[in-house]
Image 1 (cartoon, rainbow, N blue to C red):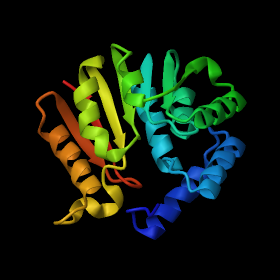
Image 2 (image 1 turned 30 degrees about the horizontal axis):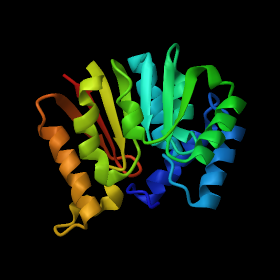
Image 3 (image 1 turned 90 degrees about the vertical axis):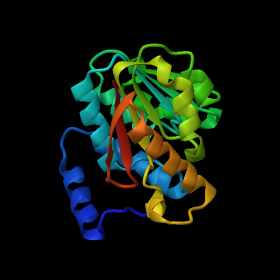
Length: 211
C-alpha cells in the first residue's frame, strides 16, 4: 500500500519508530514481515503507535475491532490497555488463530477476546463500547456506523482506517468503493452525534468522539 505522506517524511517516521524502546521489536517485525509476504493489509507502525497513544489517553475498558486480521492493530490496543479487553473479530478462523498466537507471544491474551464471524454482527452484541475500530470492507463503513453507533457510549471513540483510500477520495469521478468511503467521511463530519478529525497518516485515520 502506498503512503500518502511524502516518501522522505515517511522514511524519517519509520526510522523514529524503529528506535523506540517500548515495543516488542522482534514480534512486530515478524508480523510486518508476514503482512509483506502475504500482501496482507495492516495498519503500519505509525498508525499502531497512534492507536496506542489514543488508548493510553482514553483508558478504555472495552475496545471492539471490526476487522482484526491476524492481530496487528489489536496488539497496539492490548499493549496500551491498563484494564479491560480488546475484542478481535474476523470472518476467517485462520486469521484469528494467528492473532491468538501473536498476542500470546506478547503475553497479552488476558487482554483479548477472539471472535470468528461477521464483525458487524459480533460488534452489535457489545454495549457501552469505549472504542470501535473499523478496518473491514471499506464500502460498508457507513452502514456499519449506522448499525453500531448506539452501542458506543457517550464520549466513546470511533476510529476508522483507510479513510483517504490511497488519495482516491480526491477524484471527481470515483469508483463505487471510493464513493462509499467519501459518503462515510461526509456523514461522520456532518453528523451532530459526532465530532471528527481525519488524521492524514499512512492511508488516513478518521477519529470521532460521540457527543
